[in-house]
Length: 215
Image (cartoon, rainbow, N blue to C red; front, top):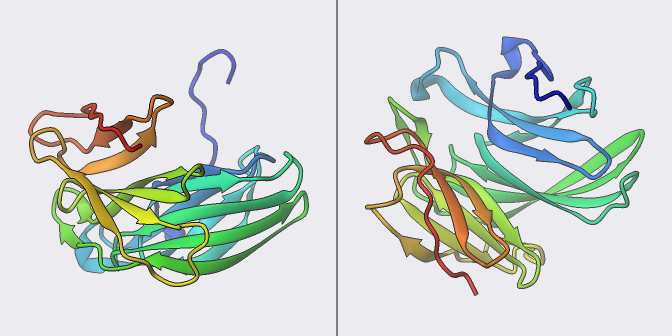
């Protein structure tokens, strides 16, 4: 809200599971949000979830996908604010994979198709964090490279040709830092080419900033 007050965008049934950090917005205001299902709030009962779709006013429009634990998301949108094409990259913490959803959307319709672009990320359940594995994502259109923060091994990986890939490609470590990275969950690329990494709460470090050149 313009006044700065916090309000509820959406509150839904527990049957769709809790929302994770996998969230993105299309240029026409459509909101995509990942649900990870767990019956008792622990990794022991975690199971694949879905991507929920909302309009800009918080009205629930439906779901798509059967996603192996959506944990992070970034969206690259080439639409015109009304209709067009977007690409949602989603990290799957239950399978250690990253999937690209190719999305076509209009004011009245959204259609998707999924391609796995990377596999083999380390992942496991955790009593404090629920799950550890591939998490925050950031995409660089200039070199078609997707960057992945891994909360399992305190590292940031790159996936080349992420938009063009039609099958899984090999991910490579950009940097690994056990001093400044503590279960990184959020990832962004700043205008100067540095990374901004948000850690989960651990060892009294929350949202620790970490920078490294990517170009």
